[in-house]
Image 1 (cartoon, rainbow, N blue to C red):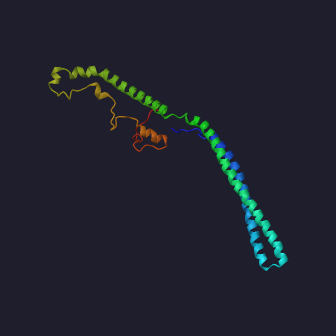
Image 2: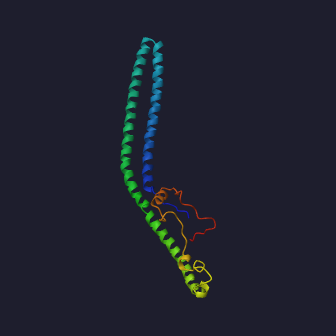
Length: 212
């Protein structure tokens, strides 16, 4: 049986999508500012190299240009810091939105109840066991009088041991052999609830058909 679990994070995914869209916009701005900063640094390096061979009047112009480049870089760095503040503010805002979305989505998760599933299968299992055991006992009771009439004859019992002439209802109960007294272990349910098949749980033996 294949179980398809409903989307547990439908509202949460919407919130994350909105966050990523805003975050991508901030990332785009950051990339543009950093590219501009690289260009300024390249231009500033060229400016300094130019000053080494420039005339006095050229150096005055280059110094003014360098100051402008430094001021521009300072503005860009300030804008990059503002972007970091905006990114932090966006994350803080998103936390509140995520908590609301996760709370809504939790209603979907709550539709899956391990107790209800286990109780349902236990009832189904014991219903099947009861039906099989009842039919076996019914068949025993139907034939027992004829067999016991023969086995319980005093003349017959003189020729056989009590064990050889034993024929009682307990022999026709379903056999069940397991070291543990419980059928379902809480730890097994916990493991299964985490998506892991307990190592102790084995598939039915080859040839054993499970009733649907």
